[in-house]
Length: 279
Image 1 (cartoon, rainbow, N blue to C red):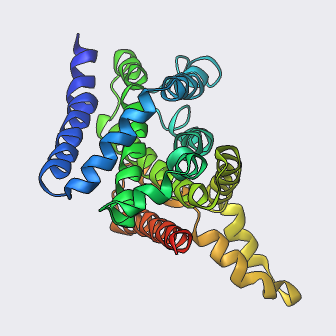
Image 2: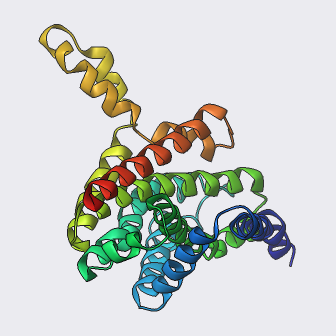
C-alpha cells in the first residue's frame, strides 16, 4: 500500500493536476475554434484501432523491454535512469511519428483540408488544435506506464522527484518529435511517407546530441573545417543533452527554452506549408 501511495502522490496526482490545468486552459483561455478542432481530432484517434495498437506497442517497447531485457528487477538501486529513461527517446522516435502521421496527411487524402480551411478557422487554429490532440494521446501513453513507477517504489525508495522530471523530459522530447511529424504530415498526402520521413528525422535529432558529434567538431582541422557549420547546426538540434539534464532532475531554463523554441519553429514551418497549399 505504501508503494501505491507513493506512486499516487508523486506520479498520478501530478499527472491529474497537469491534465486539469490543460483542461482549464482549453476551456477558458484558448479560442473555441481550437477546442472544436481538438475534440474532433482526439475522438478520431480512439474511433479507430490505431490509438489502442500504439498504446500496446508503446507499453511493450518501454515497460516490456525494461522488465525483461534491461533487468530493472535485477538492479541494486531503485532507479529508472538506465533501464527506462535512457532508451525512451529512441522508442518515441518510432511511436510519435505513428501518432502524428495522420495530422494533415489524412485531411489531404480525403480532400477535406481545403474544406476545413474555408471554414471560419484560421490555419493556426487548426495547427494548434491538431497538435494538442496528438500531444494528449502521447501524454496518456506516458500516464498508463505507471506500473513501472509502482514497481520501483515497491522494490525500493527511489527519488520520485527525479522520476517525475524524467517523465517530463520524455514528454518534451515527444513534443519535439511530434512537431517534426506535423511538418512532414503537412508536406505529404501519404501517411506512410509522412511516418517514414518523420521517423528518419527523429532518429537524426536523437543522434545529433550525442557526445561523439561534439567530439567530432573539436577534432576537425584542415579541409574538414568546411563541414564545421553544418555539423554545428546538426549538433545544435540534438535533443539528448537537454533530455539528459532534465531526466537527472535538473530543471534548467536553457533546456525548457530549447524544447519550446524547437516546437514553435516546427509549428511555424507547418503554418507556412499549409498557407502555400492553401494559396
